[in-house]
Length: 134
Image (tube, rainbow, N blue to C red; front, side):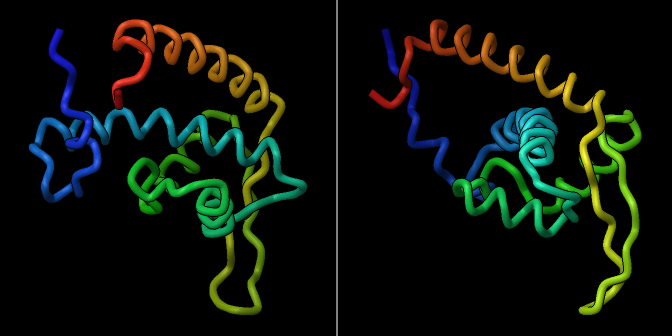
């Protein structure tokens, strides 16, 4: 059995073939929604986009997985789906900020999506032989 070249996963976007960039973008979309619901669920209060991005950075280097520019469209999509609520508040340091909180439907979705994520991870680990970096 030929092992995949895992080093390619660590290329910059500019170095990647177009099909790799497309795959990463599609995979990132679902991961971002799940990550945002997880962050919002663990928050002690409402969060605005930049504070969410900073929390994600503190919990691990996500710059290759979740791009800051994708956070805002996904936040709006989650709100449009009823999984988040938002309110606009004035800011002393600039323009007004949109703060988000998770809804009960968002908590329900987080539970379901976490189960889907775990099933997917188990399936992919089994399919790819556990660890692709060996």
